[in-house]
Image 1 (cartoon, rainbow, N blue to C red):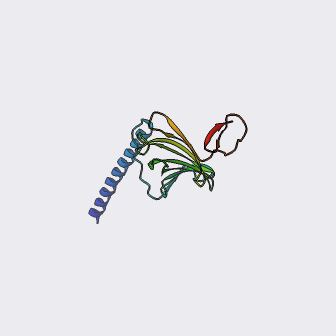
Image 2 (cartoon, helix red, strand yellow; image 1 turned 90 degrees about the vertical axis):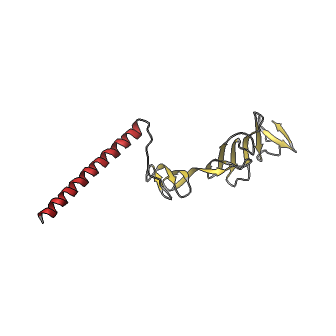
Image 3 (cartoon, rainbow, N blue to C red; image 1 turned 120 degrees about the vertical axis):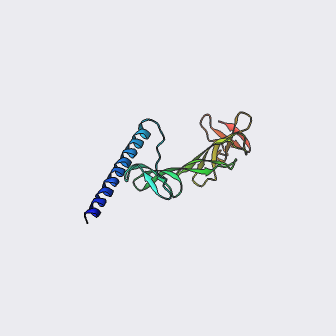
Length: 167
C-alpha cells in the first residue's frame, strides 16, 4: 500500500509541474501576443457567438452567419458581413442597417474582372446610388434614385426624360 501511495504522490507532483508549466506558457504567450505585436492564437469558434458585453451597446461576432453585429441590448442596430456586390458579382462587404445597405468592394481591377465600387441601397436593394470603377482611371455614377421632376434647391441632380440635369 505504501508503494502505491508513493507512486500516486509522484504522479500527482508530476501533473502539478506540467500544469504549472502550461500555465506559465499560456501567460507568457498571452502577454507576448497582446503587448508585443506577436500573433495571438485564439480558439476558432464555429457556430458560436463572441461579444464584447452581454448587455448595452456591444459588438457581436456571430459564427452563425459570419457577421459582425452592432447591438444595443436585444436590438440589432447594424451588421457588417461578406456579400456578393452588384455589377461585378465579386465578394465585398455590406454594412446593413434597417433602412438600407452600404456595399463596398475592392478586388483587383476592371469591371467584371474585379473592380472598386461603393453602393448605397434601400432596404429592399432595388434602388441604389453608387460609384463604380469605369476601367479607364475614373468612376461612373450609377443610380436608380434620381427624381423625374425638378426637385428645386441648388446643385440637385434629376432625370428629365433621360437627360441628367442639375438644378
